Image (cartoon, rainbow, N blue to C red; front, side, top):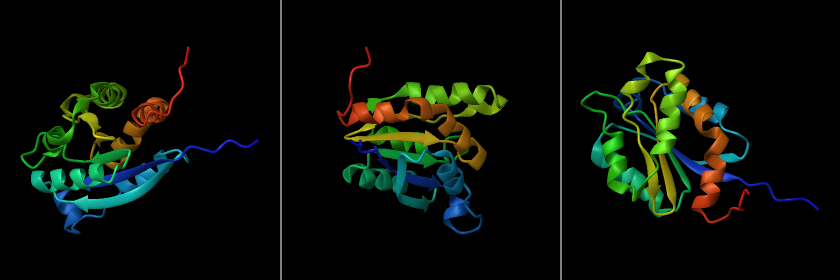
Length: 165
């Protein structure tokens, strides 16, 4: 008897003025694809500017489509145009701080800049939104930090899990 493999669908949004305008080439998408397990399938990708209203609209569109996992990259630092956490907070109904804390904790062993991340994570309707850093290297590191528990969290979110006594 064969068991059906789980495939987790996700969306990925890169938030960058320079990349959305074509001034710089995005490398975060490739870094993410290289870091994700075969159990994850990118269903949607977009690059948009660091504009809070555009970010809220994009996230809302994906939440309304019931995309189980929405990953963002960029806009989590200290610059005036970094609006990703604020836009994310407008939509999330339940905070999931442990996810962002796990990413920061993992990053602490790699860079002293870990403490400058303002990234947040949380649940909006049936979607888990996770803010990732804006560099390709940091995207890969963040996925490494959350990979051990991400699938289980998504299973719980969609009500498809078993007890682990």
